[in-house]
Length: 282
Image (cartoon, rainbow, N blue to C red):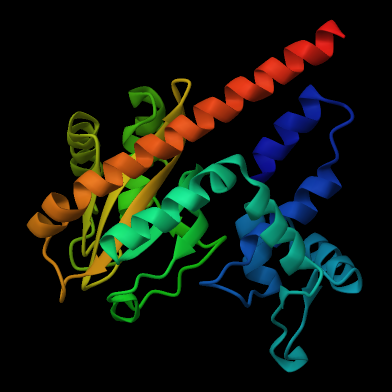
């Protein structure tokens, strides 16, 4: 979380722990794409001084949440105490719990790689990713649970952005830096906003070699009680299927999966509310 946001939270709640927030923010900097991070880049990303970052990271090393695999490189990685907590947090996420059986069923139906994710601070956070039976190695992407991906050049991200209130979506887009990741990455914000409008109308998003060359994906939002919870997608290599075939052959299965996950979330929410009501009456 940016330093300005942390300061605003602290001002609103005198019991808010800035130190805990910074410590958790440091842990979130590490991902499958960037498992090794230095003090300077962590400090810059979290928004703290380098001396403060060094002090916090040294503490996290002592607690086992970070480690220095190669001390000479001065790089840090998640430690042995960090992985179980991160995995448990993902496994217990309501969307992950409700989506998991339907994600397995979707993979069985289409044979390609399937993913469920949420929008987190303007980026995509992967909760679960099941490698496909076909073409997964050809994707050439090191993406797994907890990976953080750009929202503007992924099917998941575009599906999530498109299903936010338009004013909120446009505000996020204004704050993004659209770097070219794949041959077809959208690098102009007006063009991205136009595509998000089309996605709202279509009900699904297509990523056509925007994150990486040779990769297609089809994504749909997951909603419950009129709230956007996340998105689910199917990823496949262009060497096995083209855009038109992906939409026609896999689109119905994807939309059905998103509906099943949404229904499961709705059911569980209703049961939780009913249990809360019974508890308050007793």
